[in-house]
Length: 449
Image 1 (tube, rainbow, N blue to C red):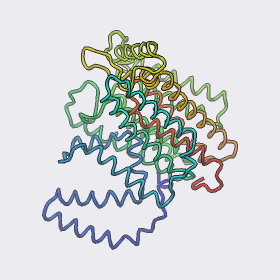
Image 2 (image 1 turned 180 degrees about the vertical axis):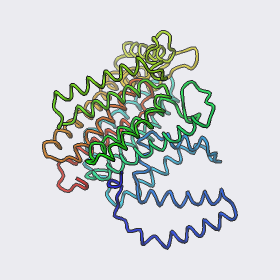
Image 3 (image 1 turned 30 degrees about the vertical axis):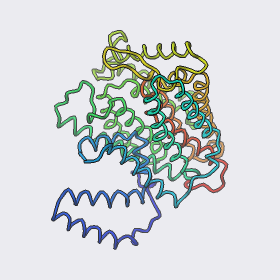
């Protein structure tokens, strides 16, 4: 179904001898120890697979690293922070192996969006000077570099490489299917103790739902690309598998955000008439309302619960008011990076659960201007991409632009409800892809166009 975007031009015949030698060694180790043999297989197979498809590692990052967290929750290893180490190895190998195809182009590094990202970094660093919780501020900035900054730079590799972006979306979708299957197995075979489903202890239900939502949005590109009915039917059937864990998780913002992002994807289609867009949007809204009225799912139950009776929503609203109050109390410089604090009966909240309020209350008007400029410019570039590729009759980059814009809108929506700036790296990944699609549109030599 996804064979076309996963094609590659590597001649595997040159690797046959090395594959045969590796299999012989693995079989010899298997006679000695199954675990040693399996470890050898991973050390050999993963780099070889990343060499063929660097987008595999990037796809794991695009879907929020949830699969890595699940794997290392169930497979115990004797090293600290295995998920973070595995993330670094996958990204590093992917960048290294991709480098021979196409290096990072300076036109991306000199773009206004990149400069705004540096401005956000500078504002956060300045906020450390007067922070009341400097350790958390340092932690937040450090992981902003590890995740957000890295994701933007990885996306920048795909300058003029539309086929590579297709592969990235393919793996993000396939990894989401794998995560959904694992979730089904865990829910079926385990007497689950949590009211809201999560596949393992370190996976937050919200981020599980976000990850699967990104995978669904990635598949929209192929839904628009495929001309035959069978692949489209198979994709539509897969949504039942992908949506179920989202509903089990009881995560309201990702569920509603996915619905709105799907409408945005449809509304941005230039081939659809305004009349049809209005009717389809109206029907979709009615269907979602009926689902919430008559469904007994976790999502519906939490959406229909009054705010005053639902602790999570109530404290989130209090955090928003606290963030707004902190900003109004110190609008020029803010209270300092990492300084937000709201005491609650269970766990104190150390960020306002809203990306814009976070930058505003902690870094003042400059922080607010920086993040709004970054978001606004990304949206403008994304819409310009859609208009340009439509006017120039370039269907593949047009659908890539619409898909990536929908992912950006979806992840931005989610950042308004949970996660601090360092735990929303997919926004920066999507922004990086929008940036390279914008920078690529004036190029005469484009791969996969």
